[in-house]
Amino acid sequence: MTIKAVIVDDEKHCTQGLVLQLKEVCPQVEVIATFNSSVQALDFVRQNSFDLLFLDVEMPQLNGFDFLKQLESHNFDVVFTTAYDQFAIKAFKFSAFDYLLKPIDDDELKAVIAKWEKTKKTPASPQAAMRFEVLLEQLNNQIGKKLVLPTAEGMELIDVDTIVCIDSDSNYSRLFFSDGESLLVSRTLKDFEDLLDTKGFMRIHHSHIVNIKKMRKYLKADGGYVVMSNGRKVSISRARKDQVLEVISQISL
Image 1 (tube, one colour):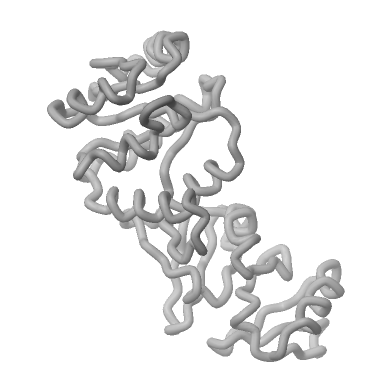
Image 2: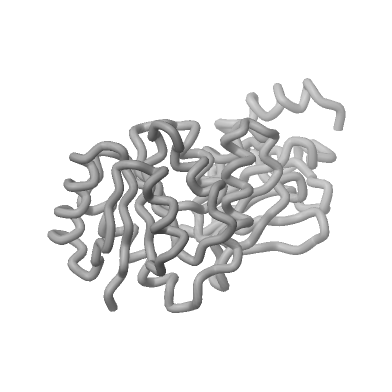
């Protein structure tokens, strides 16, 4: 299957380099157009059909995020390319957008394309606009109450405040919610620890993360554990016990 791609990057050497890189390591990708001006790229993107847009974040006149805002809708997938920016990367992860750090690594490029090929066995996701909304929420430094998560069926839009706790399940994680439901997602507990570290969540065990606001009791039995708002009992590891007790002492359970 040929994957049709467009590259938008204000730096000419970046567009040329990515074209050559794709030819070498991902020959199934056909680059149908490249642009060094995001403004000039708009009409082409609106009028043509393709599969993937490699979009630089930092560009004059119209950066990558503003570029997407100009499009009323789109049926292609976006891979952001960016220099190292921890804040932007966290936003990408929150909204489940793919990204590549410059200089682009061959293996990471192949992984992104392989992931796309695996997920695109189904038609283009109607959730692209939803994911972009979550991305902008993060980038605008808002509270960030929404999180887009990959599941076996596709994507789920989650209200962060409804998450009670998260358990490790091998390379997956299971989220438990206020309404008693749970969800298995293809992200590690470490991913959630990084994503939610500023959202009122805390890792209290190598296998557990809890929403601090959802803790209801602390009990000393069995080495110490907390009872969550949904009744779930979550063990506290010995190594993290002092830190957990310090947090508990600062709130009213």
